[in-house]
Image 1 (cartoon, rainbow, N blue to C red):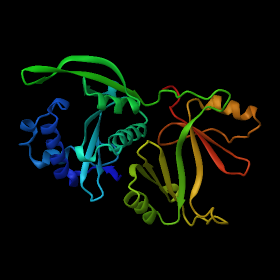
Image 2 (image 1 turned 135 degrees about the vertical axis):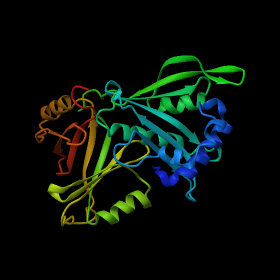
Image 3 (image 1 turned 120 degrees about the vertical axis):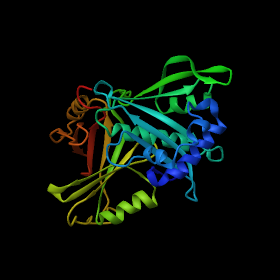
Length: 312
């Protein structure tokens, strides 16, 4: 199930996908074919901006032949007091490509991209009241209804109501009783020997989507954040002349395993009470979130990564 961010080069395919969706399901979209069909291709290209911090982000799902069969986007608010919000828009999967998890994968990919922006806290959307399949999809991804807008959209001689839904990106998970509060695997970190080769493999061969990419000049190191459809991530690192693993199957590859936690301090207290030593707490320079390392009995590096920044 290849997924990736769309760029201006995808504008023609994206235009065809969306116009077909407007025609097929007019009750699901505010836009119409009459309204957007005459717009030039340049307008659609502008809807797919590039760069690390665009005002919108659109991702696509492709079939085995490389055809675009699904898409969804996020709009990021620019106003100072709204910067914690984003809006999910334009969710569509072609009828022949449904039932394979593409819709859920697109939503999870956008939520992962939202979580990669430290200032974001909530993603909102609207869905036509009565569209039970779409509502179930969004609820499974963490969205909850918070209101109903009557007569939201004109449809023929009548009107359609819209449900307003929101997903709190850092709603605290339920911690298991008596444990260290582990919620899920947040990411796996991998050190590679050839960055360009590994980047091509993970993005083009495996089809993982790029969330962010940074070159850390002081360490002559690349850091590439990749996301899976369920929102879990892989951090791909390069370092100058990394030593290979001393034995197989522990060859060059997995660096450490990270667990997301809702409350890092509570997790540390539980580990210390069990006699487990941890390193000093550090702060991720790109996300502002706190983390620390410890080890299992065999010395495997493990990380605790706090899901939400302090004070959020």
